[in-house]
Length: 206
Image (tube, rainbow, N blue to C red):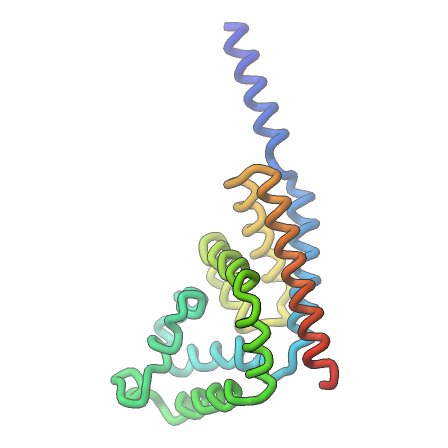
């Protein structure tokens, strides 16, 4: 009986020692939030609009029934197919005038020199963007519908972003060992800082 108790106690201690403390999670989420704010603040309005907020407007006007899946549709590259369609599709043909105007605005933004420059920076860093894609996959798994929607629709809402990142980091910590967690946080910080540097150089004149 005593031996069982000792073994159980040892397992509990090891589990506690191996678990990333909440204060560490909060600290790392706070850093990510600051980097995210700097990242979005550096981008010209048209890019933030084209990448994020106009898609919210399109969702609300053109495919409101998909609201709960909004984040997933963008993350899985199904947004255009589901909410916009192509000119000869049934989806496109059912759109209101306001919806069509928003779609036209999105396409105009995507043709702008600023947006093309932004897209090239992203395309030239496939490994980095792959890590961001995995990060968003984790967001899709653990963050609330509102937290995920706010990521695209309320880019200045750092409170919701922070809450979401705490959940992401907690899930990473719980699913992996401390070394993996540390590397994950380090890579994401490095990726954010690299993008911030590139955006600062690309759009410093704006």
